[in-house]
Image (cartoon, rainbow, N blue to C red; front, top):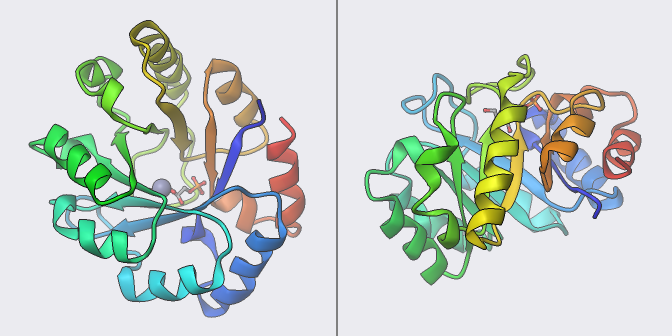
Length: 216
Ligand code: DX5
Ligand code: ZN
């Protein structure tokens, strides 16, 4: 099966965001990945709901919202109001993860849990059947353009094993340092969804890179 490609608009040209969204619309990309940061959970602040409101007006692709914030459950109504397809919350940001996952599903969105590079896959054992997707961070969250952490490949293999052995239907998404060099290894390890920011928007022909990633 071909990978799902989700360009991360964190690396888009914010002065011409409409142009970059139109590029995604024309391209073979499947989703739009949106990184919301709060300056607390991660050492950076990106954009929030007022900006995403305009993104959803322009995009024709499902929105994949990655919340790098503390207390993400507080913003379920805002993410729902965007019409988001998936809502990703960090394992490390949720004391009552099971409840948050249920609340996201009750709100009509697909619930996803994200794990930081230092969070072991084994900690997902008791939630893996309840989530639509697991997002494996292959960099420490907060910034685009960082170096890929190689151990992420092993984590994706472990996650694939956990999913297959429990009968879970969860998709595996990977985010951080995804490019034409790392993507084939991620797919081989079991990844279903590739998020890429700088590899797409930093290239002179982003549509071609999306096509190439889709063709892996
Ligand atoms: C990082 C974000 C990523 C970021 C990836 O915290 O979650 O989505 O945009 O950027 P690249 O693809 O440049 O590593
Ligand atoms: Zn992200």
